Amino acid sequence: MDRGKHRLGRGVAIVGAGMSAFGIRPDVTNRELFAEAFADMKQSVDKGFDQQDIEALYVGNCGAEMWESQSVMGNLCADIIGLTPRPARKIEDACASSSVAVRDGVIAIASGLYDMVLAGGTEKMSSLSTNWTTMALACGSDTAYEGSVGFTFPGLYATMATAHMHAHGTTHEDMLQVAIKNHNNGALNPKAHFPMTIKQVMEMRAAKAKEKGGAIPAWADEMEFLNDPRYNPVIAWPNTLFDCCPVTDGSACLLLVAEEIAREFTDTPIYIIGTGQASGHDLHDRDTLTAIPAAKNAARQAYEMAGVGPQDIKIAEVHDCFTIAEIMAIADLGFFQEGKEAATAAYEGKTTRDGVKPINVSGGLKCKGHPVGATGAAQMVEIFLQMRGEAGKRQVTTTDIDLALNHNIGAHGTTAVVQIYERR
Amino acid sequence: MKEIPFTIASFNTFLSERKLMASRCSSCGALWLPPRPICLTCKEDNMEWEELSGKGTLVAFTVIGVGPMPMIEAGYGRDNPYCVGIVQVDEGPRIGAQILGVDVAHPENIKIGTPVASDFVERGSWHFVEEVAKARKTYLAFRA
Image 1: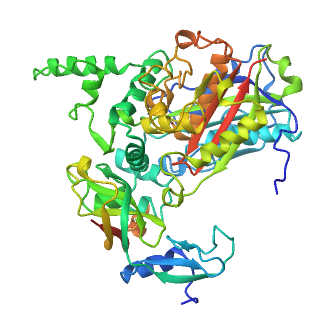
Image 2 (image 1 turned 120 degrees about the horizontal axis):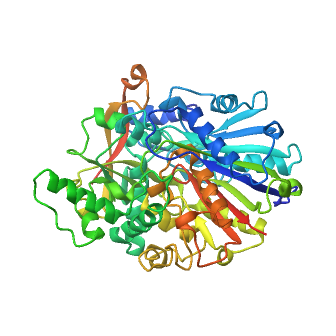
Image 3 (image 1 turned 90 degrees about the horizontal axis):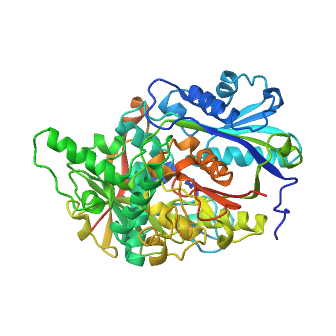
């Protein structure tokens, strides 16, 4: 039995997209970050729009209860941008919160209820110490059986990494190549948390060592630097510091409208032609630890709805919260075969900005930063810019980006959202 | 034992008695660890408790230096890391737990496939609020 049409009731397009600067932002709270993203989004709408026409707000937020001791993030974001009394809601699905928020906005427009909604997400994470942030993030695991026995988020992905290494011979250097690639991209993104290549980080650390008068480390290249445990310590073996995305504050949002009115706002709307979402088990109940079943399921839904396949996608923003996560993502999405092909794709230049399948040209979660409740929407902001040729120095120029995809994982794969975008 | 509900609290009470208990579906025979009230295979809610041998095999793991608060309070940290992993018990299902008796100073020497046996450790509870977190609880572990 397979009920449902698995199609949108009508088409939906993105006509505006914006994000705050990502980074450590002690000066602002979640709602102010969201207002910053909203202001950025407003100036992206080519022909302008009347704010009164926004009919509802969907805000992804993972854990303001923990990081800010503040719930009700939906109405606070509505209030600060002057959207009250429009209906506003907060959506929480860990690191996929904002993709789910956007997807719910898409579904609301497709249903015919609204013509225009604002959707996005926000997260302020720097307010807690590393220990408490580790605890807050681990609340996204199944705390009855995962967090409470000692798993952290770097630890859950590290566990998948050891399974991947055992099954496929994947090496830690394969994983670190993903970090090198994504930092090469993010170095060109002025909104990234760490807009630097790993080579630049390495040179900075060497200069600092010299300044302190100590022995100057003589690393031959980035990989040698990354293999130096004094500078790249283990967080959860085999995950080192540079395998992990940073703890970041940031917001992002999109203006979604019904397809039939999209050209009132811009001559180049970006259409959402496929959307898929799935849930998944705890690690222990999965059939595999070397792939994320929910991501495969969400991808299949999105491809079927869009009527395209992995070979048609020109660029993708994927959920690289840890380096092994990108290696699994590009296989789960069908871009590369699970195992050696996916594990070595970054090293072989297949996923670099000028490669056959550019992945995470924004810098990814790894370099751009991962304010968990804003990440999915921020992936879509990058896709919006890239598809319209507005991504500045990091613009992909080797291919005409008529089809793109984002892949956003909630927690360790207990939620997955995959969406496909078209420029006509 | 059918009168004991198939809850997380029941599982934890069994752990405090040093028993590793699973739920077996009386309708289709599927075995669930951690125990579930509803069978994922046949969707029936017709479970019975079953004690497991506690013997199993390590199928994936990590060694953590930066743990969540209950592990920090138990004395773990960068200078005293701990191993957690996924264990497949001999009866079939898998579960996550702390792994004791492995060389945490050299994770590259820890082998997937290592035989392990259940053990039980006491720690504070998982909670942001101190008055809840301070309650001692028994957690599942496995020893290599």
